[in-house]
Length: 132
Image 1 (cartoon, rainbow, N blue to C red):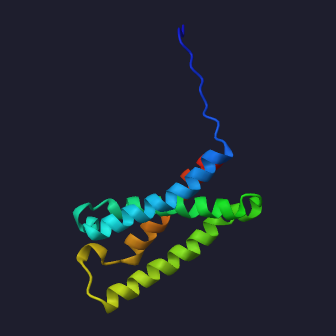
Image 2: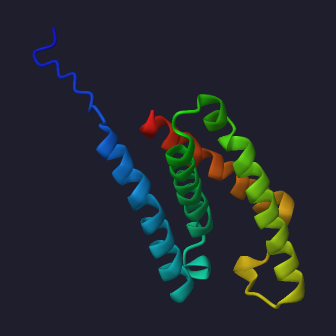
Image 3: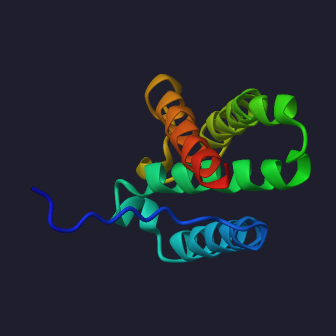
């Protein structure tokens, strides 16, 4: 027998969603700046994965804001993200080849790059669930 039954579902208003869209890029860019200033990529090994989750959330929230009325385009967010992420990872490989970077930023695409892209999908999925 259940004495207390609490069913609470938070109803998100358009204002809440807009705040999310505005705040997520600010949070992402601020954390990314601090991470580079204090070398979190070497100090916190899991930070690279966290930054890709945050980027996925930020990417989808901005995508949602731009195309929120077009459900077909919103479903293309994963494809757009994949293209951008592949280009970014390719640039990382070129940068690691040309410039001497720390070992934490050394990119081996099939491990680091693919993992980064897949982790970004988790961020997109979380933002998509929140903004529904």
